[in-house]
Image 1 (tube, rainbow, N blue to C red):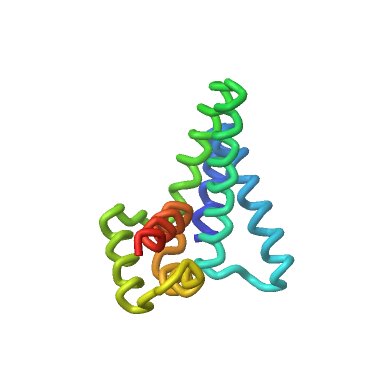
Image 2: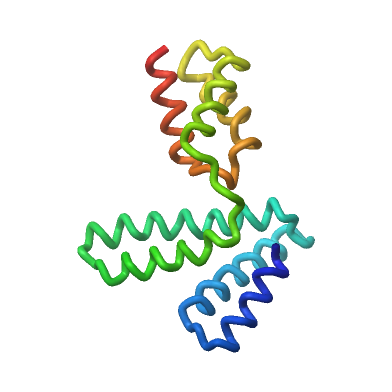
Length: 147
């Protein structure tokens, strides 16, 4: 996956696609930083985690830009997210995510809100990088309050 990113970086340089080049350079920097922190080469799963963090920060930025009325920055950030999504695995549909959450509830059999950690521990390995984890967390919280 990292090699795909580097190939796309070179292609963006050759085609002089400044927007894509900028985003890919930021991701490459984040990956290199993570490799330095881990003192080893990143696995594909770690790579997906880095890209996922980049997407998450951009989504948070969109919220702030919308509050400030900066539609120009909102559009630019959405384009950056589109570029980053190319490096993420296929996202699961909402129904598939709900199915995994239901499976977690059947397996863990939570009794109170304090079982949130157990449920997240069950679903995270199955959904990380494949679903919006804030949606997953919110859905689990709602189901726990309705117990």
